[in-house]
Image (tube, rainbow, N blue to C red; front, top):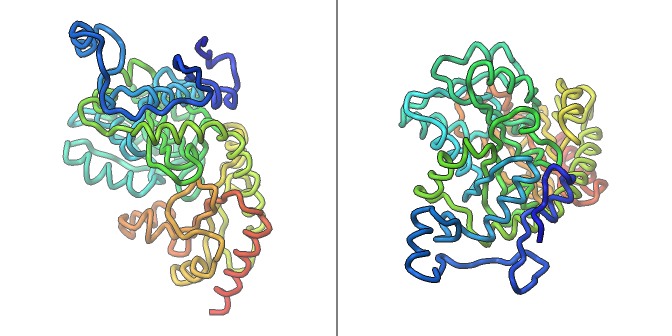
Length: 399
């Protein structure tokens, strides 16, 4: 079977066809290779594989056929030269940082990143004398001012979690090039179905495959994507020798998820837009965050940079944490879980879950208000989701 040319086909075609390498059995679905090791035809081949003189499988910590198909498919969808699959999204961030940074290097990060990412930077990388400075995502003068002669990475999520703030990727990519830095973009909220950061100038893309790439909350995984020269030895060697490896079974699940990614992201976006519009301006709600709303600060940028606005809606309830908890507890259809990107709609209180380890000052700077609630809109009927939220809002206002 001829290898698919990513430049020739659209992202939905790539999501179904890229990376397929049927075996002699002629299977139509991608096979699942549940094996820890591989057999060599003779001692000479074993030696050649270990010496990297001959390509091929050695050990599933760093070479597995099912994982490789997932890597090739996601790379094609992101228009990347290389993809390295990892055991989790955080494993992807850690692998990228350990592979691309050295002791004494400096990161400039958006303040609006996942709370666990902040803890990784502050508590883990700091042990290796890698410092991090934080700036407002859309304050481009602050980005420029924070860069020093030791800065190696600019790191951001766009849209951000949970406020859906949008950064101008091309503008930050230009800044990174001028200052000899690498731009790393977490594309978890959009996926390649809605946004391709590498085509906008980013150097590295990060994914938590656990979220939308899977789409049904089944498996944990992550990925790092970019140019071969960046990932080939640097990040790959972290995987090979450090072992934050994606399992073959999880890779196979993610492959099945990728096949419907475009359809799902369109559906998520359509339903989320209806929920955001319905929530906007309702009594008891101080603010709604969704890039598809005309009053979102980066609405026009999102229109230019993304194919659609995504499935995450956040809003602030009047009455602080107590009101937010009451609303959450009074929902019935929404699952109370910190995960997102599932076919089931989820609801969470960021200040006490995903961002709970941030200090009060860090939460305030990041816009994580006590009354903030995050919704991940799934595939239920929108009318039913509205009814559920209406019931919860009414119950909250009575207490």
